[in-house]
Structure formats: structure tokens, C-alpha cells
Length: 267
Picture 1 (cartoon, helix red, strand yellow):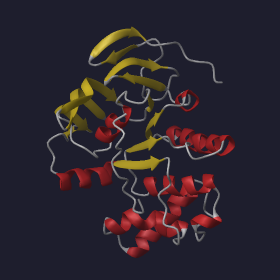
Picture 2 (cartoon, rainbow, N blue to C red):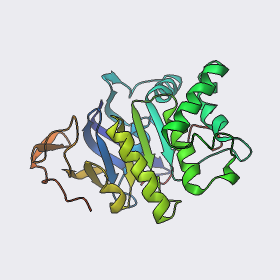
Picture 3 (cartoon, rainbow, N blue to C red):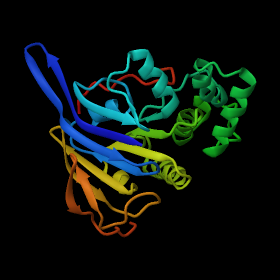
């Protein structure tokens, strides 16, 4: 599904070079549920931008379903991004005066999907996230959790192969955040490939694999729970292209548009 090999990303800020990613390699298989964690400045947001085709690497290779992406033109990246990746962010990025149904239809409008078909697809996506009875509600008529579900439905409406979420519960209270993470678990059970970028270990613990970044490299890659299509617990895990030994045993369960802007914190 996703193959990143020897990826680097260097930002030039005046006379200073910031090495956000340093020869990072990572493979994510179809159907995996992966959490990417790390402190501010670890490179996790830069890696998210690369996975989401929001930026070009300085060097290295990045393949999605076998297709090399690192040399694509901006318009080619946009086409592939719209086809392959759904985004969920901490901020819901909903239009204030627009109904849930029309919010979800936005990506289809930009993709040129006929209106009748777009409406049917939007309603189906809202049903999928449990908002079939809220299709005509505006954001100010929805709770925070319901607004995030609208954003998730919008991310799913194009049937992407990857759902990429950045701090998806950051703007929610604990109970509502739990509901959203339960929804992610349901999507994973249906076969969706999920990648969640977070600093919250409770959120990361929901994933079947936790990848930890520090200073632009992977320092830990741990499978915490067996999942369909993933190697069993105890199988070796690859860190920067090298097997580093057995993974841990299963843990006890304890903008206004659809396309987000690039993260700027370099973290």
C-alpha cells in the first residue's frame, strides 16, 4: 500500500537548514491501523504531509499502491491525493451556512461527479458515520462530535484507500473523542487503512501499530495488537528498512474547502 524509502525533507529558512526527515523508511500494508507519534519537532507532521501528498520530499522514494509519487507534478499529486486519501483534522473545516449533506458533497463537486450521484454518495457516507438523520443540519445545529463525523464522512465520500487523521479528537471532550475513536475502530474493522498522527498515547493505543519518531527518524515501530492483513505479534518489524527484532506481544485492551492546508509546524 505505502512504501517510503530513504526519505529526507530539508527546509531552508534563510541561512539555516532544518532537517525534518532524515532517511526515513516505512511500509504500511493495506488494512493496517497505524498511529504515528512523537514530540513537537519529531517530524511527525512533516511525515503526515508527505504521506498525504501535500508536499514533495527532498530525496527518497514514496509509492502508493506501487506508483511512485515523489516526482509527480503538483496537479498530478492533487489528482492522486483526491483519489487515494481522505483527510480528517483537528479542526473540522466545515462551511458555517452549509448543511451536512452539502459539506460532504464538496469533494464530489470538485471531482465533477453529477449532482444526483453526488447527493446519493453523500447520504451514504453520512449514514456510514451514523448521521443519516442529520443530513440537513448546519454546523451550528450539530455537536462537536457530530461535526467531526461530518468531516469524516466528507473524507470517506470518494472511497479513498487511506484515511489520514491528524489529532482527530484534539477539539473534542473526552466522551465525544471516545465516540469518534470508536468510529475509527469500526472503519478499520471494515478494511479501511487508517493512519493517525497524534501526541496522545491514549489515542495511539487504539491502533494496531505504533510508530514513534524523534528528530526525523523512526526510533520505535511496535505492533501492539494483531490485525487482519498484518504480521502476527512477535514478528520482526522494519525500522528504516532494517528488521529490529520481535514486536511486542498483544497488549491488553485498556479551510473552508475539503482540501486542508499544509501543516506548518514542521513537527
